[in-house]
Length: 314
Image 1 (tube, rainbow, N blue to C red):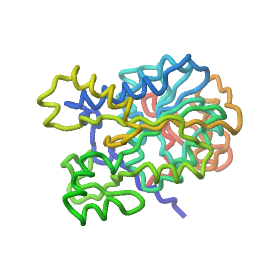
Image 2 (image 1 turned 90 degrees about the vertical axis):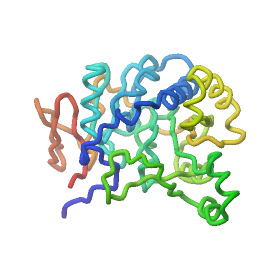
Image 3 (image 1 turned 135 degrees about the vertical axis):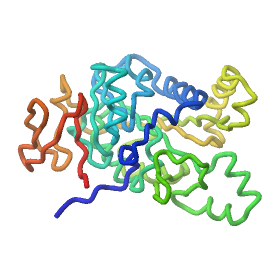
């Protein structure tokens, strides 16, 4: 029986270039860099770092000097090829989906997943898979789209129907803002907002604990961006991020997670040593342009420097 591909945001199917989304969004990008820089502050760490949904390497500079080795994982081969053009051999590039990651248990000492969770409709499964690949004493930055941001709170005051939708437990489907992010007319996409209690409940079934919370991009507004200079917005952003855990009125929330217990990290010296079959977690046999699982015999390809471990595909 053919395995069914999980519901994902598949940009390549629609020939969508995610890098174009960031044109005109310098404030949002700089706000996220600021948050990550603060949350990842500290001495450089040994071991491996994973950027899940890292796309074309937009946030590579926030962790490149902190870990010995890094991996960018994304479902888009096109985006990863862009990362290859920009970063060369500085980082390993793996195409995979977050529900079936091709890595050994306890591989990574650090990681992040930014602007991905809102595209996933099985959050517990995704978080459990992230827990599996993170080692004991590891840190992971998880971002989620916050349904209780300031604009939605104001809408809820004005509309009882909207308030009922917003206050219902579980994920919230926001109204479209006109940004399609690769979705063609007539197609349904996954775009979900959450609140902190839902995320805490999801994390409660893992070994992750929240060690820091940071609200991000409070000034995400076309009107504000057209009237304030970027340097001033970033000053306000720094202040808001510092006090944001009190209110969490921001459209984006960054959580610093700590996994204190579990197996010690797997000390792989190169990317081939930490990879396993995403289907059965079996050992792999590497060839020049492909790799085959020794157990289930599944074959995976190498495309212009990007290992394609997306499974299942249909």
